[in-house]
Image 1 (cartoon, rainbow, N blue to C red):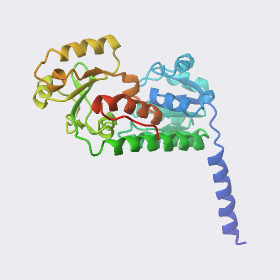
Image 2 (image 1 turned 45 degrees about the vertical axis):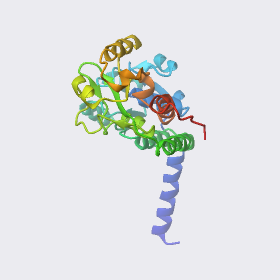
Image 3 (image 1 turned 45 degrees about the horizontal axis):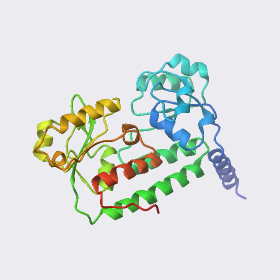
Length: 282
């Protein structure tokens, strides 16, 4: 065999082995969605620390804490001797550079904008943690269910939907946020889709006159969501109010999904957008 071909063959073999059995056994997560994904993949025994915001599933609360999503304790991370840190779009670049200078491997993830990007992130983390097969099964199952819901709503009349995710200022999800996917897959029209920032006014909501208002305010209690609902119910000219279609939904299902929780979110929102649709599991 030609020496060059032999060398490339050997290198390919070792690369394949490395991908099949990665060395990452001491992992730190820098965001709730990353932590949820690690648990979903069944790789939680490799998770040695996460952030103070990582409280789902409940077991994640008992992991060592290295700070918040946007401000980590660099010294503590280094002292824990991780062999992989998985960062998010909110992680501070200057702090990540310090970790790299300490020869700590980083896996950078970005905020997903679509359901497909959520799936891609799951596959990426699965590959890094030696859970590629598990990740593929989870993603394929979620894709099948999401596509079934999408197909069932394609021919239906599309109600106008306002999905509120912030209180002060009033905030919604534009088409650049994955939250918009909940409305798209369940056959609605997001009245805030074309907004540049997602900041919206009550006057604009009244003018657009949505058929459905969903409240999933991030970082607030359920009581705050109910109070916000009462506030909307005072605007009697809005179709959603006239038809009593103002609903509070759990932001934990809506605002930080894995492929599996995205499907749960779809099942939660589908009967609110289209009460006439009876979703049957594929």
